[in-house]
Structures are given as structure tokens and as C-alpha cells.
Image (cartoon, rainbow, N blue to C red; front, side, top):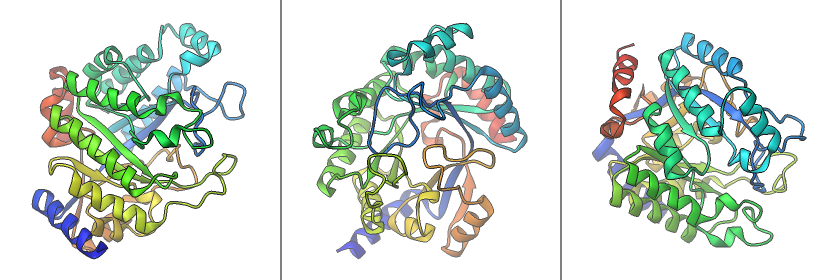
Length: 345
């Protein structure tokens, strides 16, 4: 029964995390929305000639970082589409005009500028090689990639990942393994409601758990519900039902090891208290400056409002760093003074 499932998930959460819920004060930097994949539900990605296609310039990044620092942000989330240089020659020329040979080279420079301003970078750049992650790790407290699903079925013709080669489960699971081999603190997650079954969600969570047990590097797992967006092939698809989202959260808490944070974004939920009842211990990144560029129709709630909802449910909402405390031993030594400074601020 679902009531028993939720009770077990809450009990496991409380044993490890008590009554504290965390979030990361962040600035969301959509470095580029160019992406070689075409997922049927994605409203973020663009091709170069599409309206709204944009790559942030160094000046734009610097300006947003400065605003974020003034507003008390701690995390600089660098987010972009998969492998833009693999598909778009104009993008490669643009990077070259700024003195960068690759996307990763550009991200390293942006991460360095974030650190100089006292912000801690976390990069989600789609699928990266082990060598690319190794280049980013000295300047990022953590890296991320949503697994989304471990279902090959969703990659078949007519399914949402058919035109997205970087969404093949083996490709994304390999990045989790490479991050583990490198000893990088890592964030991943599943997407609920894109046509997968509950058995497929469980399989994805078990694959994440197994990778963590091999390497000890998965710091958090996001359980994110699908929300339809206009002008996408899945615009008329129903959003992920609340009961399926809540069951997925509870299953994540029960399947994953206790040291792994379970997160759900509050801007995509109808009721924060229900997320708490299902077993989350984290609400993810929340920005006072930038919107959720992946889900523009869904604004982040104000932190004070969230704190009040958490307090009424018997929890204390507290800010955190982009790397969870139990995983700070994985952070490059050169970053630790920045973590200490951010903690003391």
C-alpha cells in the first residue's frame, strides 16, 4: 500500500537526516541552449536558426555572476545542451572568437570566474567524457547529469528519446561510472511521466544505486516530474500525476542508500508538504535572480514561503553548498578554501 510505502520512506529519511530540509541558493546560467539532441518534451534546446537560440557571452556570464553574488547566491549552476560543438559549426566559431577551443574550455573559464567572485560552480553540461570531467573537476564542487531513464524502450521510434543519441541509457550510465572512477561528487536523477513504467523507474534507481555502491560518489538524486511545454511534440501529453511522482520519490528513498540525498523541485509540485511526506530531504537549487530555464512556466517559490511551509510540517529549511557535506572529501583540494569561505559568509 502507498501509505506503508510513504511511512517507510519517511522513517528512512528521518533516521539519516532528521527534520532538516536543505536547498542551494543558486544562479542558473544557461550557457547555451544549443543541443544536438531532440527530446520530444524539451522546451530548452534550440538549433542555431531557431528563435531564442543563444549562447551566453563572457560578459553576460560575468554580469549574472556579479548580480548573483550581490543577492547572496552560493551556487553557480552552469547548464547547457548536449554536445553543441558536435552539431553546429557556427557555435564552434563563436567559441574560437572568445579564445576557447571547446565547450569544456569555456566552462572551465566560467567556473574560474565564478570562484573568483565567491560562487561555487556546479556544471551540468550533458554527456561528458572522463577526460572532460577531469578538466572540470578542479573548478567544480560537483558535476551532474540526469539519467532520466534506463529504458531502451523510450529510445525506440515514436518514443521521446528516439532523436536523442545522448539519452541512450548506456551512454549516460557510462558517465556515472566515469565520474565514480574519477572520484567526482555527482548529481543525477530520473524524469517521471514521459511514458516509462514504474518498473522502469525502479530499474533506473537501482542502476544509480549500484553505481554509487561501486564508487561512493552519487550525492543526490533528483526525482523530477514531467511538465508539458507548448511547441514541443509532447505539448498535449498529460503532466506526471501527483501519485506517480510521490511514489517515485518514496521508492527512490527506499532503494537508494541512506547517504544519498533525495531531491524534488518545489516549483514543479502542487504541494510541498506532500513532497516531504514522500521522503525528500532536499529541495534543490532555488534562485532569487534567474528563472528555471528548463521549466520557464514554473517559477521558483520564495525561500521564506518555503521555510514557512516546511516549519508547519515540522521541518527546518536550511541553505547548503552545491556539494553535500558527506561528499566534500571528493572535492579537489584547491576548492576547499572556497567552500570554507562560502560556509563562513
